[in-house]
Length: 195
Image (spheres, rainbow, N blue to C red):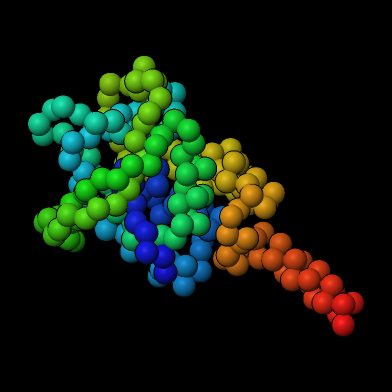
């Protein structure tokens, strides 16, 4: 279990999308699922907007006194998970420290924690005025996001395939595991020939 956390307010609130990004599959193992703790949370001082012509949102700081974004705080992330999430979010966002308030099952505030989230840094003309709707996304658009070859995951998948992954693989994803097995067999052959 990792010691990092992050606040998500868009497509990554859907466990299938989160799992697809960090594990490479929408159906992770029970052990993979158990290492993450997902808690509802509120983030003050930001507003969420739809990104123009996209299925996903962005948040930006707000000067409105009651501005608040509802999302989830995911605990148990590793540095490798954040590397994949950074690739997934792309260069339109920066990962910044924030202090959301965690909620219990009844919606009551429990505590405030320090974590990170992805804040929109591209031009604000790329954002629409209206609020992004998670339920609409889940109902009407998520099917496209949890398919096997969706272009939204392309950069993450290519980085893992091309061994740009600084972790060297984690064994959770079949493609990563295969690369590690091949690497280990090659190293074993080298060791045998050296002896």
